[in-house]
Amino acid sequence: MSSFLPAAPEQSKPKLLDRVRQLMRLRHYSLRTEEAYIGWIRRYILFHGKRHPNELDEQHVSQFLTSLAINGRVAAATQNQALNAILFLYKEVLQRQLGFVGNALRVKRAPKVPVVLSPDEVRAVLSHLQGQYRLMAQLLYGSGLRLLECLRLRVKDVDLHYLHITVRDPKGGRERKTMLPVSLAAPLREHLNKVKVRHTQDLADGCGSVYLPTALERKIPNASREWAWQYVFPAERRSIDPRTGIERRHHVNEKNLQNAVKAAVCKSGMPKRASCHTLRHSFATHLLENGYDIRTVQELLGHSPREITKRVKVLLRLCIALVKRRSVLCWVDQRFASATAAA
Image (cartoon, rainbow, N blue to C red):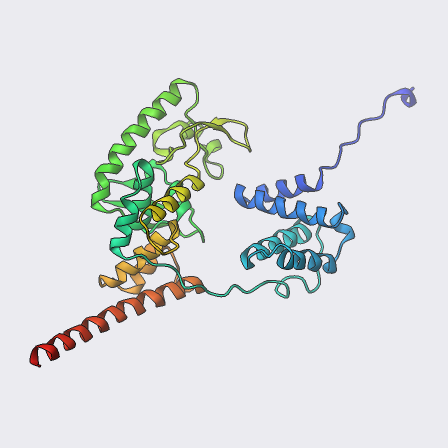
């Protein structure tokens, strides 16, 4: 009798890219990293004629990276990101160890001298920004924030009374407090009042929730709709969360701010190639010029003295060199003026 019963359907094994997604979400990788790694793994598979990565070895990985460098002419950072994605695929998903691939194929990035704006140049750039983009750029410069640190600010992280900003879940994972300029307190308060009106309307429309990190949405069910957890700089339109399918209002897209700052730099007529991160570099330089010690600047930037990167070392050395050069020039000017007067 049992032989006539239909066989139980076999559970289909998840596809390779779905396994990568599941594992990355289990490890709490960011959505940006997930999208980047999935993209590189897909390109790696297509490059080798859609062959399964289990059929490929170190030589195939080397061929793909070589093609990126020679034919694609990608930057060193891009090539290293592709390598990290492939290493994650083999080591974490397929449970395979590749031989020489790793540090042998990793490209060393040559440290670049960062661009720094003078106070007058910063004012020129800010003068060509309007609305919330001007306020965001002022925070990048006045508080030394990274681009995404500014965009991901929550209402509860801005203290308008004690004039400081708490930067949570930054690059490197070290939370910190940084200064909030007094001149920005009133514009920021006015901006938050407008944002709160929009949030109230979202709640009336049956939306009003915001993305929460880790498991906070499960632990505090109503937190996503509370005012304190809303983004300081929300997007103009609501969108669908790709992970949950819930309609939410995310923060402003970073491309919008980057394009606004780029346009402001062009309008100012400045020959320098400045960006949002240039405002952060200028923040550090001007603090050192005004007598702040390097340890304080490191803490405001969010860099540990033991884990400070080569790029930051170059930046701080340049800042100190600029300060010393300015003091030397002032001394030379004084000596020249006195010698001219004596003659």
